Image (cartoon, rainbow, N blue to C red):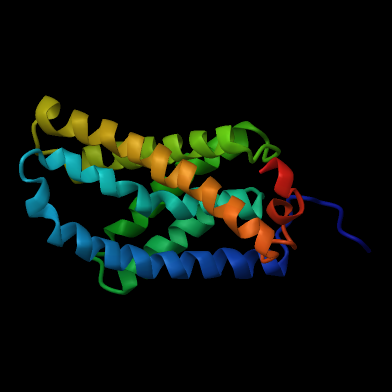
Length: 196
């Protein structure tokens, strides 16, 4: 019997989401090392280092844009965070909870459109929402001892901006670049190249 439920994950959905997650888990681990190395470059205004944050949020938006099914953002970001933690992230396995929060942010954006819109506006909203969820998590978990107005607030605002631009716009551009190559032909993102 044919399954007509469009929200049911296919095997290829799980495989591709997992490939994206594992690849970004390795990138997360490397990005964490880059974050530590570049701290001195942002000593003039430490919260500004969060311009780099958006890279950690890409899987949440990218997974949602490619898989286009409930749970894709959450799964991709969470597994990427888990891989990063297992590889020895600077922040330990706390990043798993962080990935969960970040994935939920993007998931809410796609859910708001009932998983029917994957255009640039939706991608930007997903980037913004995952940035907000990342900022809220860090506000209470990592930055609770820092000054509110001189650190936590600018940290949060720049994180959201980074999430919108790097994760939102960046993921949309990446899908748009991949679609013509044919690697996404088994997904809506590949079949609807003209409307991405």
